[in-house]
Length: 494
Image (cartoon, rainbow, N blue to C red):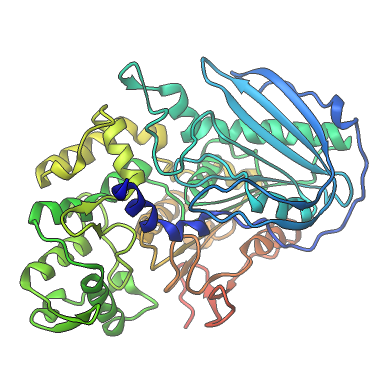
């Protein structure tokens, strides 16, 4: 239990994974109901069958949600009455739930799909109600997996083998089914199709947005994809690298010591371009710092661990950016490393096919073997990194993405690498920027924290509906301080 609580504490910043509902001002179309809530039906997406459709009128007002620790689910006031449609569908022996909320008054003519986080394929919390309050028909899906965002232990394996049906749902299929079902329900209820369809997601939700652009370019007019977990099959393995390093070196620096290295790197480097920082951790060797009031001297062994974590698994993937907090991926209980739960579950279930496998036993050689195994087996299923976005470009879709350069869970270098590959595929940054814009946020963490974009969804809507591509995005801390402008990649605002 202590180990589980430690892992949960390590990912508490993941609360910011919950996608924003979008506060964009919209022209209210009123209510033109095509059918009564109780009479809503839906045809199955290709390859699926509808098991049941349940439609219920809800009164709105103050909407509350059951707690989903560690994520907050604050009550949302002022929600209009809405029709809640629950569609249960299946492909094989899976059972997928898709839920659509449709405001009875004040519909803005738009449909919005919400993406997931970790091993959650969808969002069913406060952002849902906020989107309805803003006038959207909103939908999400559980992909038939769950219930934990941290682990796939409950669904990854079936009879000792990977459950390909559920993995396919989680990887891509359920996001497309969500688009098909959600837009169809919206059209039937209001008597006309939504004028615009949007995807809104961060982390796993960001990855799903990229998948939609790659595989189903006509599903959405606009996609907001923040801190995207693309390169999933490589990122998940690389994310246990800090734990592998500490266990292999048998040295476990405390949080206080890790913080000293991160602080020193931030002070020495250009915070606007931390990925270019080369500050040497050996410069702290011999320095004495105070940890909980006690003096601690930084050792060569500590510096070696930090260097390996920053360098990453060389030749395979990226390490933690210098100056970024170690809290997400380099957590210890004083005697051993505690790996981030999401990648730990990936290795145990999808690579070792053993939920009880102990990743603390991995050597450097075994780690490299698992990394290559994951890439070979799963890139085509869940890599989400196909650079050919030409069909999405031809469809007129817009992809707006941002990534914090201080992301302590998913290094922004993976997203930057993908963007460069798209540019090579499509003929350079100028052509790519006509439909796909990436914003890098210095000092911003995973899906938020630090000076992150304050309202990227409105920027996306203005781009899609008014042909106003954002050259910059306003950014600020959650309390409104440290405001600045972020420039579209490859430019850098100073």
